[in-house]
Length: 169
Image (cartoon, rainbow, N blue to C red):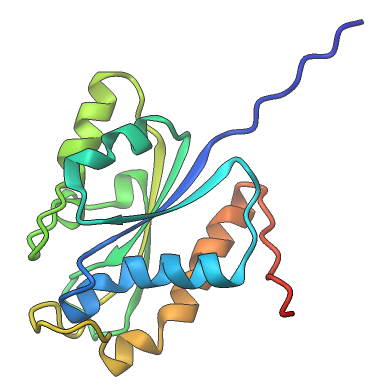
């Protein structure tokens, strides 16, 4: 009897945002934190998508499950955490009107057209400031960085992925 190797689903954790505009960079900052503190199996890519926009299409079409980490303007208190999946994701959240103009709706629409659309979950935090030029997060958003990273790890657990912390030497 020939056993076939079961292909593990490809999972991408994608942090987007512009680190030059305070809280706009939270997605990238969470990716940095995850890479520094956790180990990920071979089928999980943890990607700094920065402000790449349409250049992310190749990454997105190559994945089965996409977890986007970003600042989410939803007109709530700064520091409010969000989790949205598939149809729960308002098009206005994916169509960024911020300074880096990453239009995820357009990217995902093109992925759908080539029949390579992953399941999508957005985890994010309400920013306090995305307009001030500066590389530091505001205190309220900085205080939620580990919580947001925890939400990413929870999403991975939902997909059957355990990501142990790295050993401190």
